[in-house]
Amino acid sequence: LAVLVAEGSTAGAAGASDVVTKEKVGDCIDVIMSQRHNKESSDLLAQQYTERTEALRVALEELFDRKRDEKAALLERLEAESASAAEQEREVAELDARYASEQSDVEHEVMSSMEVKHAQEQLLQRQRQLGEISNAYRELAPEDVLK
Image 1 (cartoon, helix red, strand yellow):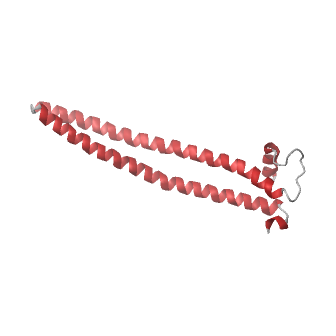
Image 2 (cartoon, helix red, strand yellow):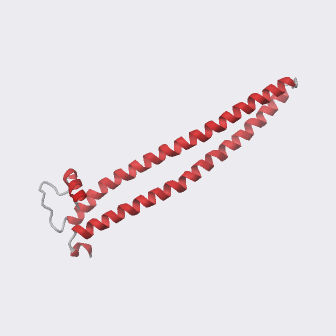
Image 3 (spheres, rainbow, N blue to C red):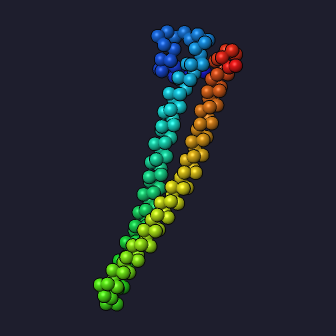
């Protein structure tokens, strides 16, 4: 109740006066809660985007490091074997194709694992928010508003 009153005073949901008629209690609850809930949802999505981006960056950097090392070793070996330019191009193209496929797999794996986690976080947040709205109605709204 105190949180709702504090939020309401900053949101101006009651209008020009601080008196809210019992008919307007539901509207005030909706306005006050929706402002905070929208911000919470927005903050969660931004945090999840950052988390997903960082996980993808780390996974791809690791993949690119492996590719760079493997390519250097391949070129060194081909040089030592005096492989023709055509042979070198073919082997490098095979390596590039293999890593392109791996990159796609890594991206898909990271995104899939994050989607499940993030969907669960969003669901829990929404359940908590609906509980807060329900509690506010129970505490503040007259019985005829709840019907």
